[in-house]
Image (cartoon, rainbow, N blue to C red):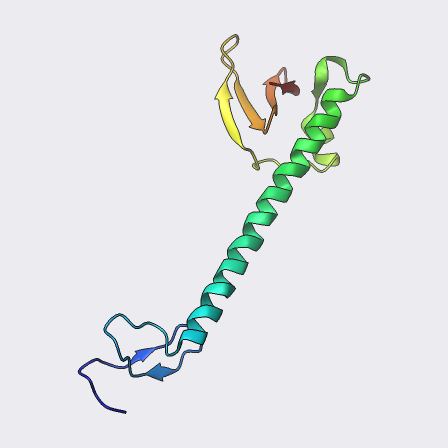
Length: 124
């Protein structure tokens, strides 16, 4: 290979050393660039699907509690939520309740706030 004044580099896809033809060349060939970006996009999409599935599962649990007429005042314990598969920490947004200054944790249109060591399930 001819030496065009550029130092040899390591291809991020396969770890092989190559002589770049352009100053901004990162991969040894276009195919490796395509495969590398497809792989990183697939990993990113898989991670996003994991979070979306957790959030949608939490939403369905809150929805079921909100619709259940047997639960008085829509108040449940933390163990009740955990037993039904609720994953704490997967939220869409948070806010403050103006009436009693309690934090409201929201999952889509449903949410919950702490009242007397119980979680009160709310709907927007």
